[in-house]
Image (cartoon, rainbow over the protein chains, first blue to last red):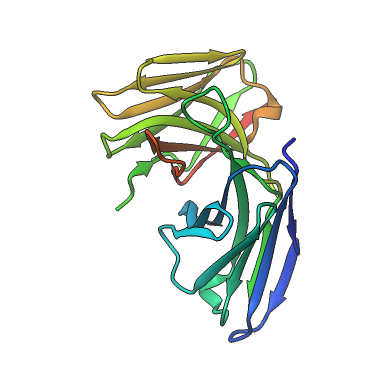
Length: 116
Length: 112
């Protein structure tokens, strides 16, 4: 199993408070991703990173920011949480240093976030 | 606009029979397709993949078929086992990109 951890695993917070989720990898993979999973929507990409300090938006980036100051850590921040951000958040990693021309993503265990 | 669609939210199959999960896509630039399996309270795990230069890829009980002209792929599980009960996601990506678009998932239940 890829070495990916997410913290916290569960969090309940109130509307308007800032929240930061952490993804930590021990695989030295270049790419890191944040997804949210919601019923009827599957997995939707929030932001991704293609290197330290290099990030880009995904399909549902509004209300979220990310930072990657080290290869191993990718942080997702909700500046002012809203109830619509109640979801399960998954971090994923992938790497380009393989012999294949595609690269599957390895997922972390998820963080269940509830915004009241 | 959903670029990757899994039109069946759920599927029930008897143990030992074939499970067929379907996935449709709209973007003809997609070159690589992945299937993931997800158990409750866990992250998705990679199952099998196929590139657009192939129309079939097998790995044990799992086979993925790709019909590029129809923009359709399917995952066959033979024989189905109770441990296969999970949510299955298909994902599609283009050449040279490290981003994938995921479908909404199909919940498979294999009945013992």
